[in-house]
Amino acid sequence: MVFLSLVASHSDVDLETVARLSAGASEVATGVLDGTTPIHGAVVLATCNRYEVYAEAASEDDVEAARSAVIAEIAELSGLDEHTVSSALATKTGRDAVSHLFAVGAGLDSAVIGEREIAGQVRRALIEAQQNGTATGSLVRLFQTASRTAKDVGSSTGLGGRGLSIVSVALDLAEDLADDDWAGKSVVVFGTGAYAGATMSLLQQRRAGRIGVYSHSGRAQAFAATRGGTPLTDETLPEALATADVIIGCSGGDNRIAAEDLAESGRGDRPLVAIDLALTRDFDPSLEDLDHVDVITLESVRMAAPAEQAAALDEARGIVAKAVDEFDLELRERSADAAIVALRKHTHRVLETEIERVRAQHGCTAAAEEVEFAMRRMMRQLLHVPTVRARELAAEGRSDEVVNALGALFDISEEQIAETAKQRRAKKTDRARGAAAAADLLDDAAARRAAMPDDAIHAPHRTA
Image (tube, rainbow, N blue to C red; front, top):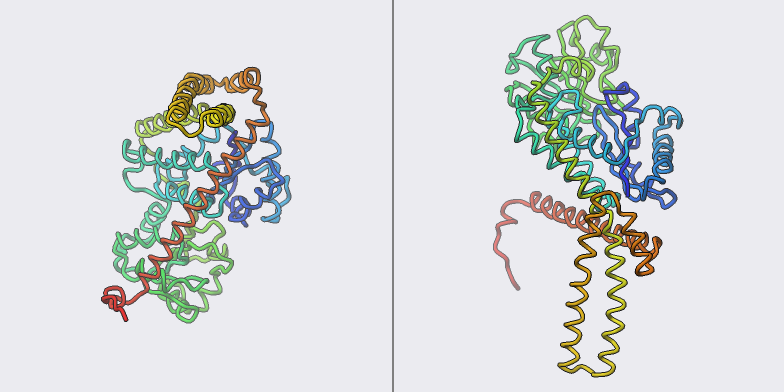
């Protein structure tokens, strides 16, 4: 088993390319698992400034074919040609892929170093993959370990201690352009996703006076009910734009606010700060040509992000490196699991054959039961040392010696071991789907309960 990741981020490519690659992001993982590729599982991490696909293949020999399959799927969904996609995506495999994800989750590869929003995005990427049934057990462990590492970095270092994020830096820039009197400002937020939620929280912390929320999808009412603010409709949006001091784009929808929209709202030449946090731009570039409008983009945020202290960065990198070492060791040890299970299945079949002979000769007597108990205990003891030694060899990167030994001593073929590994992956995937389905049922039940009137929830049960 080997991990590979295909990565496009703000560090290497422009954000417009990242946005184009992200088209159809939610369908890539299921698309590459159609049975025609060597990919066993996939998780997609798509944010405002990065697009990354993590996949699991059977071996190093399958990496190139797996990479080609992912590139072809992204090209088909995004409409870009495969050469463009291939050029934009850097490929990492094995330990490099693990190290990259851990650094990303800890905020070490963010435009704002140490920001905490990315940790939540990593968790949500895994949850979505589990719900869609595309995450293997190994990918689940990878992403869960990345999340634990991010928590360790956050709790053990001063990195990100100031609570900086892409949203907070953008709001700081807005204060530099205007003033920090948010209580007197009127703000319009476009979008109802995770970034919109983070934006609302920070605006409320800064005690923004009036906050309107608009969503092209019509979700503003539900969003405002839980997050605060005033929901806006197509009819009330122009009036809100006319009096707005700050507009913040978090949706990335197809409908952009352009200079004409501001002119039609009747706001005149009143100063306006437009913060565009959407990957596919909520505000048309024509706004940048208006003298009375200051536009803040993700690139502006990246350039303005303050540097973290060197000591905190070094400490965070040390935590990440240690976590990578531990995960890599565990991964190598687990590389012998399929071989160990194959050995146990082989010995179990031999054991059951002998036990059936004892039962045939002696029936279900107390003596027969004692013999069966002794034989099972002896088999467990005989398997203990080979199991421990197999994992030790695997940890040293010598799992091929384990496979060769099983073939020479027990006639267990590599094909049998591969089939065992396939069955184990299928069972783990089924368990992950079951867990995700159970979580969905609980969420649905909670939602139905929340929608019930209080008197219905607390009313005593009546029987006929």
